[in-house]
Each structure stands twice: as structure tokens, then as C-alpha cells.
Image 1 (cartoon, rainbow, N blue to C red):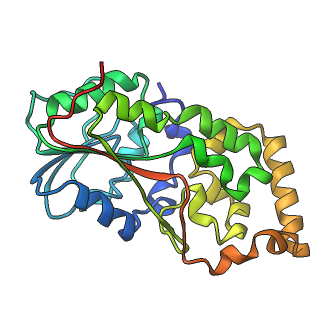
Image 2 (cartoon, helix red, strand yellow):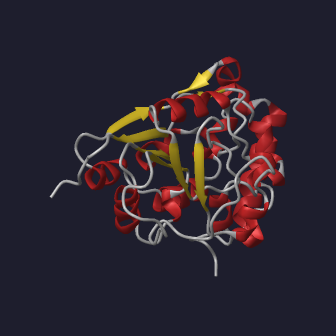
Length: 257
């Protein structure tokens, strides 16, 4: 069965190459983990943001993702966020990077994170309310709409994690190594590469004909210079304040009643 709403056994085999951890984003995640020495990584994927100077336990339900984990990463346990096979309070901190939109029961998954974690919970996600500000919405609105339906609202995460939870906007660098959509804000040509799109799961929710139409228009606008007339300033913009968010719940935070 697919792990989440996307069948990564069929769709996720390029993630280790296309979705590498960006060191600047990693720095923000690792700083939020504080002094934690033991870290649980839920929805760990290929392990791109796991700290190398701490003891990490990884959980990943997709066999395709587990198989792509580099040799230097710990093997991932086959389990889901909603049913973590650990005793209460055994981890100093927990992290979940670009995964909460895949969970079948967000409330249960977050409750499980809190149950097994005695310290901070750090979640890297996207703010669905800001996704349509990205220029790709002009070319592939169906893709952006699919992504908005999947991503839990930031206010819901805060409500379930507790009012002391902090939300931080994470700038996306122009040469970002992690190939999510906004990573290519200054490199529009990259969307013409099928390998790039196959590592952005929301494209899988759009019919091939719709994708083809969007890409044909983007290709034409790049060739004619129309894209650069509208968005060319982004090519020299060092970073983008987009939809990437770091949600940090401090130790002991409790959900609002």
C-alpha cells in the first residue's frame, strides 16, 4: 500500500538525487533541535536533513525511500507517524521534514510525536495560504491547487502542538539543493526536466495533458523572453521569502483545548 497519498514505490526513486538537503535549511532545523542528543526523524525519507552529530532514529514507511538512504545514514524503521513503536519520552527531540501532508491522521501523528519526545518538536513544512504567490501558479495552477489541498494549515499545526509553538519563515536560497518547487524560483528552466518534476509529488495529482499544456506555455515564454519580462528580476534575487516554514514546539507544549 502507498505510504501516504502518493505511491512513492512508483514515484519516489529520484529523491536521493533531486531532494538533497540544503545546508542552510539544515542549519535552521539543527538549531531548533537545541541541545538534543537523541533525535527521532519521522517520515525520514532519504535522511537529507538528519544531523550527523547526534544519535538519530529514523522512521519511514516507504520501502523506496528507505532503499535510497545513503550508507552513512542509519537504516530507517518501517513505521508510520500515527503508530510509533517507542516508549514514552525516550527521545530528546523529534523532527519531521516535508512529511506532515502525507500523514493519514495529523492529530494522531502529532500526539505520537509528543508522546515519545521529552524535548522540542521541529517540523519543516509549507504554508498552504502562500503557495499561490509563487509564479508557477500562473502556469500550473492545478499543481499549486493540489499542493494546497494536501498541506495542513499552519494554524492547525500550532493548535495541535500548543500556543507556545513558534512559526519561522525559512528563506529559500537561489541555488537551493533541495528540489521542491520554490527552490527553482530563479531557475525556471528546471521545471522542463522530468526528473525535477517527478521529485515534486504534487505533479502526480495532475493529468498528463494538463502538465503538458503548462510546460508548453512555460517553454514558449522562456524562449520568447516573456517569462523574463515578468519575473526576470528573480534570477538575481539571492533568496525567496516563500512558503517554507519551520514549526517549533518547545518542550512540554500542549494542544489548545
